[in-house]
Amino acid sequence: MAREQREERDSEFVDKLVHINRVAKVVKGGRRFGFAALVVVGDQKGRVGFGHGKAREVPEAIRKATEAAKRSLVRVPLREGRTLHHDVFGRHGAGKVFLRAAPAGTGIIAGGPMRAVFETLGVQDVVAKSMGSSNPYNMVRATFAALGAEDSPRSVAARRGIKVSALQARRGGEAEASAEA
Image (tube, rainbow, N blue to C red; front, side, top):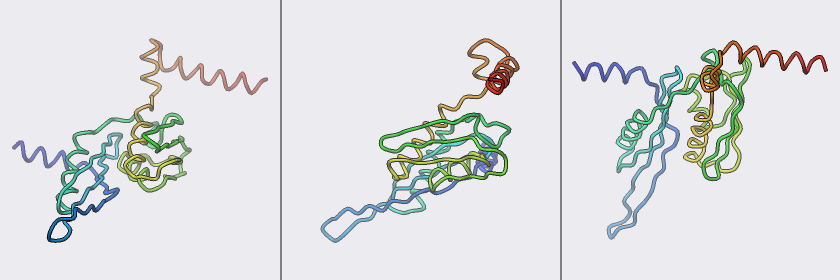
């Protein structure tokens, strides 16, 4: 029974292989190859995680990375279930990423590793720019740092002790005031 539930829960996740790295260890008889895999897993409804796995064979490395990704899932608040609430910056090491919310119909405008994160997260409209390192590990970690800094109006209102409607009203009032000036 528990195994069936686990399989059912695992089937809701979409996983994307971002990168495979082949490393060689030189030994007396020649070279021994090992593989490292970077995998991103998400439910396309606002939860996403990434994992890293190493093994002698590629399928085993991917399996280990997928399990690690499922253990490290984080929830990201999405506006209308399709884009981010606000623009955000993230960095990890020399990898820097800038993520911008986009209007409906824009699509995912992002490079390699970031695109995999957004596709598994369930974001449909986003504009992203990576600066600095193009190392997939650092780009994925920087993207997760940025997504971790993402805040929803509900959480901001709860933190300030006001209603979401009051927060949205203030935002609309500022736009009207700047238009009049």
